[in-house]
Length: 119
Image (cartoon, helix red, strand yellow):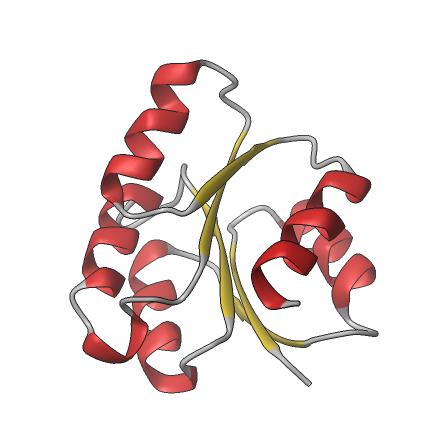
């Protein structure tokens, strides 16, 4: 079973993503950007769902730090944010995210992205 790291600080969003994904993936949860970097290095997940607005360090910086680790350079990272402006999406991609989804998360789009990146 593939492992997905969810880096998210809002309990409601963690619960939603857990309910959607727990049957098909091993889930690892981090509640701030710094913990997300540590959990990524510790677990080397198959994919990371990275909230952008996080405490301690934001999702942009967490993604940049994850990308410096050789074992995680090619790990797909999907940025998640309530910001729908194209500039936010570009900032996420510039920091190293492969993709970007806006909240509230559309289940069908999320599943399609997971299938695209994980098979």
